[in-house]
Amino acid sequence: MATIDLNADLGETVDGVPTADDAAMFAVISSASIACGGHAGDAVSMAEAVGVAARSGVAVGAHPSYLDRPGFGRRALAVDPELLRTQVSGQLDALAAAGADVRYVKPHGALYHAVSADAAAARAVVAAVVALSDSLGRAVPVLGLDGPIVRESAAAGLPFVREAFLDRGYLADGRLVPRGAPGDLLHDPDEVAARAVRLALTGDVMAVDGSVVTADAVSLCLHGDTPAAVLMARAVRAALEAAGVGVAAPW
View 1 (tube, helix red, strand yellow):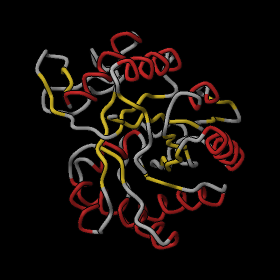
View 2 (cartoon, rainbow, N blue to C red):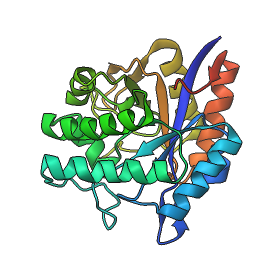
View 3 (cartoon, rainbow, N blue to C red):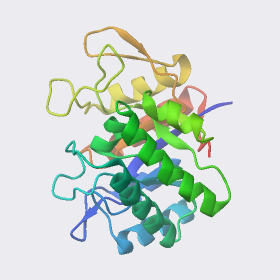
């Protein structure tokens, strides 16, 4: 039976208030990217998310970002690479200290896009993941899109795992439609479910201009804070299983 990973960004608590229905999402997904203090989350929310993940049989990944809680990590910031390495390492260590068995690292928001375009940012993040890997005694995979992060991960001996987005629009060159631009987000559970099945079976996705983009993803992402996230996640899982595709973490 073919399988694919279904991940969601969870644990994104802001001022003690969750931004998503984490409990409902944990029941459907196979991997959870947990906010570790940069854009959201704190010691309490991390520990809670790690506990729910363990009880749900969901793999835990770290979701570090620029230190930008006011902007929820979605603003592009100019950060010195050495400082960025230190900031990301601090977030990874915080999640590990909360009891997480960290199986992968996925940068969040603007940092996610930065490591796909800027070699210095990618190198800084990879250095932080290498430090975590050394402390755990195993190579921790990096999850993301193509770009410098792929080369830097390989150079450091880290596995790189590609993902595709179910609820974000794609440009013809494979990049995501910028937030706020037409077609940036998908909201219809049926449309998102159909995209998931297509990605799992053919490895491609339709861009906003109607062209076809090759994705070849091992993991499919749904944002936990999307208003219809739970409905979409349930529709995706049901559609994948109906198509003969199992949902399982690859870590």
